[in-house]
Length: 153
Image (cartoon, rainbow, N blue to C red; front, side, top):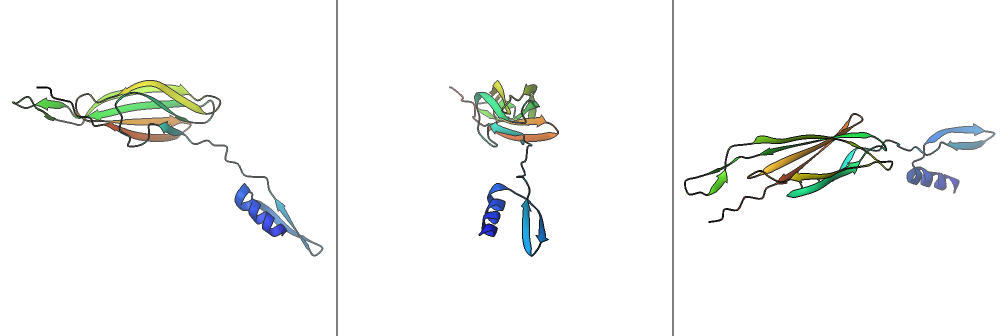
């Protein structure tokens, strides 16, 4: 019965067995304290990877409490052009357009937020790369605005 309880604790509680000693024909099992991973991984919670975007957004995520998060937002778009009939078609590209850097601080719960950034294409199709760096950890998310411009006759 005790063995079953100990095995349950090992699976559920993330406990580690320190050692087993044999004393006077009885086995004593000593169990160490639970192992906790105090390192909170860096993450970008919103927007999600490969999400379609258009307009003003908040970018937010998690990091270690009080950590400095460096956020780098870049974009690549395709320059638009017109043919003789004034129809818009995909032109040359990709062309790098946006290159913005932000320094944010995580609150005591580890939440960080960039309140307002415009993620909208500059003509045809634009992909945005959002890269967060903190404490030698880096996480990257790519989003896209692929709405085509409307040609009004």
